[in-house]
Every structure is written in C-alpha cells, then in structure tokens.
Image 1 (cartoon, rainbow over the protein chains, first blue to last red):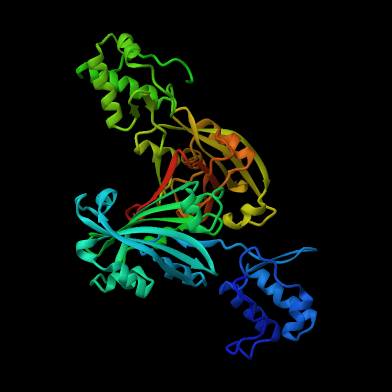
Image 2 (cartoon, rainbow over the protein chains, first blue to last red):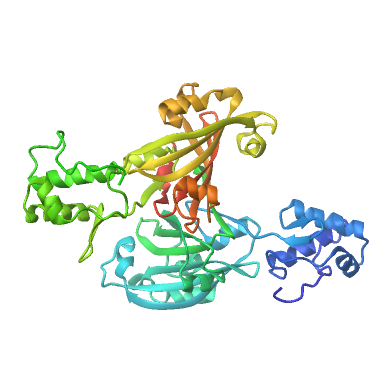
Length: 253
Length: 253
C-alpha cells in the first residue's frame, strides 16, 4: 500500500447513486490511484463496512460490483484481492501510450528517468540517419495504479528535436513534446513484438524479479510525410500488459 | 542433426553458377530442410572442402555467402554455427501461418498432434456459440528447419465444420481445410499478444526448457460475413519467432 486509502466517500462521489454504488466507486478510485496495489488483500468486510458506516449486506453489494467489473477477485475463505493488472494495449495506427490506457479507464503517468545525446549508432537505420548523426535518447517509465508497467528507451533525431527530453520532462507526453517542434501528428510505421527474460537492470527498472519475462516492442513512428520522428523499444511487464491488434485500428483517415 | 546431410551437390543445383555459389546453395538447403539444426556447429572447413571436392578458398567463399545471408555465424577459433531462427511472423489482415513463413523464404510444416470434439466452454464467447454447443479442437504444431517453432490449440464450430480435424490431417493447412466447407476466405478479427513462462507440458510440446518464455497469441478468424470460423491460441517459442505489425498489412481489399 503506497499510503492509507481514504476508505471514506470522497466529496466528488455522485450523491444520487445508491450507497453501495458510491462505495464501489470510492474503492475503485483507491485501486486506480494505486492506493491498493495489485495482488494486495483488501481490509475485511467488517472493517470496510464499519469505516463506510454501512451494514455488511451493502458492503457486499459494493464488493460484488467491483468483482464483476474485474477490479477485485473474491477468494472464499481467503479474502478480497485487488486483481493483477492486465492492461489491453492496442498496437494501432496512432499508438499513444498514455491515451491508449486512458481509453481502458486507466490513468498512466510517464516519467523521464534520464536522457542523453549520443551518436545514432543502431538507431541510425530505423531513423534513416547517418550513424554519426546525433540522437536525443529518452529513458522513460510508465506507471499505472502506482506500479511500473513498462520502461522505454526511445531516440529522436537531434538535429530536428534538440531539447526534446526537456519538453518530455515538462509534458510527460511524446505527443505534446513533438507538437512543440511542429509535428502535429505521427503514426506507427511498424512494431515488432518479441518476448524474453529481462537483464538484471531491466528487471530492476520494472520492479519485477528477473524470473518474470518481458514483452518487447520495437517501434518506429513517422510524421505525416513518412519521415521517422522516433524509434524506440518498450519493455512491458508481462504480468501487467497484453497487446491487441485489430484491423479496424489501422484504417487510414 | 536429424540425419546426415548430403554434403554433396544435389542434382537440381543450378549448374551455371560458380562452384562456391553451388556449395552455398547446397548448404543452405541442408539448413532450411533441418538437416543442420539451429545452434549446431557445422563440420570444419577441411572436412567440407574435401566432401565437396574443392579447395579451402572456394569453401570459405561459400561459407561467407551463408554468413552474409544470415544462415550461419562464423565464430573465429570456434567454428561455423547455424544461426538460431528468428522468424518474422506478420500479424495481418490474412494471417496464415504456413504462407506467412513461406514469404520469408522458410518452409513451415504443420502437423496435427491430436483432436477432440467437446462442449465449447471458454471457446463459446470468441466463437459466438452457446457454451453447450460443440467445437472441434485441433492441437497442432508448426515445424521450420526441423524444429518446432509453435504449438496451437484452435477450435472450430462443430456444427459447421464437423470433421475439420480429418481435413487438416490431410492438408496440413487451415485455409485448405476451411475451403472444403465452402469458406473461400477468412480474415483475422483480433489478435491479443502476451508473454509468459510455459507449463511443463507446453515446454515439452515446444521442445524447449521450461525456463524459456513463450509468446502467446490468442486470435479469432472470421469469414467474409464476419462470422467466427476459428478461435485459437498459438504459443510461439520466443527464441524462434517475433511478431510484426505494419499498417499496410491491414488495408482492406
């Protein structure tokens, strides 16, 4: 638990809803905000009923609603557990990490871990640069419900996007950062998905054991003229993320 | 090694090619046919030169050509090794395992391991059936270069496709099997990709250790009217397969 959940009804809870729905909403907000972590056992019924000032029947209705919507799992005789996150991350024409997750009702926060300006090297080919040209490389992580779900390393052509790390640090968004350089839109040219065990450093960055495999997405994003603007690799924690691919997500505008 | 490679020039080797190219082609055929397995060390230069009846210089030219085209890796002082397979498997509008690999120059063979007719159960939702309706379930495996690269479990609505296992056993192809039931075309409605450690049985079926993660693809194929014809799960060996997703592969006809 990151810090004590309120376990009371927030001021912005819809007052016209039945009491059990208000409680379900308050508990869901606690889960989504990471105040209860995936896998954690929630306080028992009696404790929750007392804190919300309701009877056990009302509390049970709230917990059942949470279970039906996939936020918790009730294991009889063992308690109510916050479900492990399995985020459905769509690989689509416009693949945007934060927005993608927002559509599934989750709030993702992206953080810059560090950045550097280096020779393009292996990024040269996907970005169509000369190996000696520079790239600005951002090391970021994505956090959902208080938990790291993925870490990315992505490179931007430095000549065009000098200072993009600072823009990302302010905005927490690649889309908003690129807009500052006049890139109003970009699309995913290609994603390659693989699966492997993480290195010790990667496991550490993901806050997972080295025994948990990672889902790896290598990608290239291009601007409206088809010029590469970003090449990157994201490692997703395999316990938290699955990728979905649907033809309708690729329809051109 | 499955059985002794010929290490001689086959009758169908292009006779107009320079000798080193003929040898490169013969060795490549041995690799693609699985007569040398991924990771295996090839016989040393002297042995190969003698068997092909050429000098070391000619043999080296052939090996260099194989290395340049990615079939072998020359580790100085250690020998020449057949490269591990990393097949690029495209998730696209028409996702066909065998044809997909054929486009990358690999020959895939699909084998029926066993089949059963059971109540739809968890297959009911993706196939839009009632849970008590029957499905014919095929357990298959795909082999490339003599090595299992993936195992699939896929379910077909039994009422429409009774006997599809027998058709698959004859044709080695889902596409050819469905054609017998009047399904001239089908498309991939959705793929969900995840990554996990295999069970002991799954590792066994893949001929991999339980310490090697698997890339999991859950999918649904639909006919021209959008009616589900097949729902399945493929486990790909993560050392052998990566999945690619490109927008142009999803253009409607």
